[in-house]
Image (tube, rainbow, N blue to C red; front, side, top):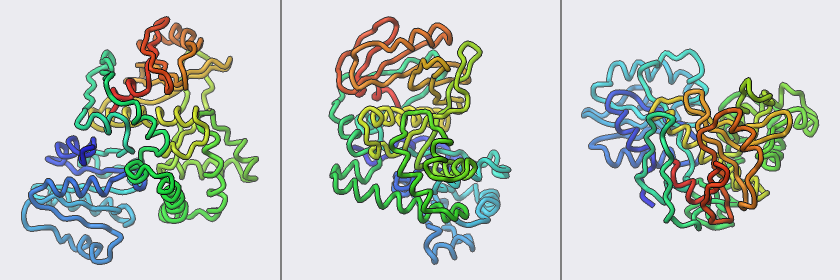
Length: 392
């Protein structure tokens, strides 16, 4: 697999006239990608806020004399970073290209008053996915929702099996060692809970957040009831909601909402839960659904961050129990629906129910264990390695 990550071309293009901010999960490869971009630049410097000498140089704006790429890692840990980087960009943008990388806190600042408006582009870096591994250099450019996904049928299914076992984070995926995976999972979770939460805000009940994180893998793929978690943890609804928001902001978990329409009576306030590291999920069916969820979310984020389209990942479920795992929407309209199955025994009847009511242009049933590729009742049954080949 090539060393270049899937965002590097887009980031290089944007650095020509704006700052670029890159957020994403801990240990997903942000620093490695930034240093790869530095290696390809004529001149550049890397600064990490956690390094005392680097902090001094950042504060006194010790930039190279020549036109350079400057990488500022973990800058979000400096309380005043946002107004400071605005001033530096306004003064030095004709000579210095600024690439800022860090944790989910970049997203938190993004949601507040944005004094940086018009000065930066924001990207979210995801774990390795099937297309990035097997189709290096593959890009996705979407003009409108008439775009057809470009599937490739001659790529190895074995890569999906490896992703299922080891996840998509670089260290355990590249090692492909159960021992490495176990140690990496423990260390990553400890860092998220003990270091990142501490840096994010004051949370007194860290031990309860740890118990909450232990409960989540069993709930992947199901509508998430905060009341059920509240009973399990003997905590208030407000506390559970706050802790879940923190885990989402730190890229440990994410939730997708049901699609609402006047044509179906949806469960409006019950999101489904997924983890960024799907290898933690014990059930094979839920793990496969989680793997596909992360692939689809990466696809949506890449189109949104690089092309500017509003592409969202939702799911379909009504009060009568009809459900489809995923719905991808394009500028507010249904684009394609995806149901995950371990095998292709039958077409889920919920497809017809929702397709007729929502006029979904494309529907896919993605299977892990079968190689069947067929069109049945307007639903394309498709193997996972073929379907995932079309995504980012």
